[in-house]
Image (cartoon, rainbow, N blue to C red; front, side):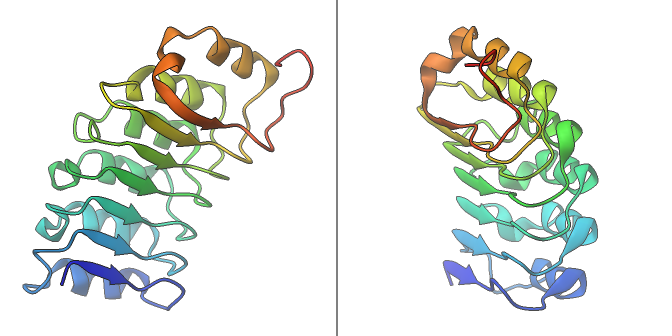
Length: 178
């Protein structure tokens, strides 16, 4: 099995722990667990699981994951092949964003979706600074807590030139940040 979509179910943390222990998912390339309430416990279970060692697309929006879960995922060597990561509509905050930004295992990311994750100026600038690698980057930061000061800081960062797409829709940016 290469692609597993379990979005909008009731998998929760216990179900993810069973998935993480599976002997039949070692060829998995994409995993979609949107809207399953896996929480930090489920994120930690995934982070510890070798089933993610070949995964290139990992979607975990709407799962009640906090900075704790984001740190676990960011610290996992099993996520080193992930190119597309979505953690939208979770409670990551700046701490979770910084963990992802500074992770040595997230260097292959090409698309990162962190819409509505309570990311502020510190998290946004850390992401732009750290994720501008040798490949084009798409970064979704819609509906967060980025201010005009944060938008101004981002606009002055030379790393921004490496981005193909940056969405700041629905943040707290006024004419001073434009």
